[in-house]
Length: 224
Image (cartoon, rainbow, N blue to C red; front, side, top):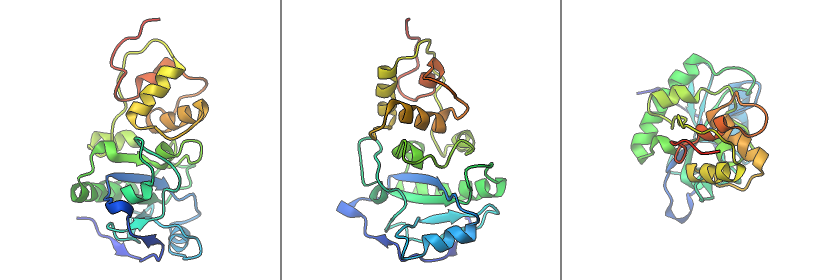
């Protein structure tokens, strides 16, 4: 069991339409410190919050009860479903997106997530980044977040190891949608979102390698 400190936020409401969490959405705070992020997430004037905040040293605060709807996701969509706030648990990580996530922070996250997933029956496929559900609008938890580390522990979905030898934008969009990226986005924003999640080192225009990492429909060689 991980140790969690209580720091209640007034910024929450009831989940709508009887929904319960089926997703975990990971964020970075993009603020100077965990203390600054905690103050903001608990300030009624900001009208933002999350269920949890994890500092770089591994300290975990809970701001909103998991039963309630925290205000962390904003506009977006995943697998054709909107109102992600009502469908998710939001976890903020103290990081500005410009440096690696501390090991102590990752260890704390890895201790917290299995408990949440067990309580709500959330699968690894239900663990997403803010950028996954809001391509072009959000880019967190960013290219420095270690998704493969979570995937190795069964806490997130791993990139596919597909065999693809051609890049096709229409097929890419269709495969990305099948993988969950259904929010409206330009080709460039969709490509960035997929790369942030599965191939953050990718640069330039769409490539066969970008198509090969998408789960679901790329485990075959495509003809030229």
